Length: 116
Length: 117
Image (tube, rainbow over all chains, first blue to last red; front, side):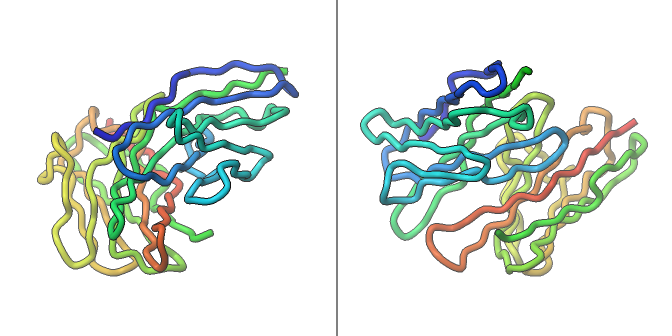
């Protein structure tokens, strides 16, 4: 069965430190991968996505992620975080069945807390 | 990117009443929309898939008679919580699927906070 696993439910980090939020997926077919950010009482905003091509994708707010097919991972990174990056981050996958696509499957989320 | 709106952003209703939440795709047509429910500090739970002009497809465990979904046009889907109870209090998020090109893109609304007293 297809699934998305976010290994850390909470990640505390100090301001200006680097951060990595981990995401692994399980699928028998090719996938499209996404990272979303959710600020309190708001909907989801797309940070970045991997569809094909270069395995390193860059998104908004200085975030980037690397698709690793052999490790079935899509970890999110930022070299230096700000207080304003404090939010919930969701990894998601959409299965590609060739002529059709499955629904988005979400991980359980990682709460990033940036401290001064 | 494309814009999806939800109305209202917050609603408080009394137990036993019904409340309607609207989801609109503002700059694209969406034959498919999704309704999610999010519990505090939890991930999004897909409730149902709304298809324009046909019946919604509900996920297992979601009561279709309680959560009525109508997708009457290519830009509007509504979720009506009927006979609401305090346990229905939650954050409801809709999403619209843009199918103009592959791969499909899914855009999310800002969410609706429902509180049932």
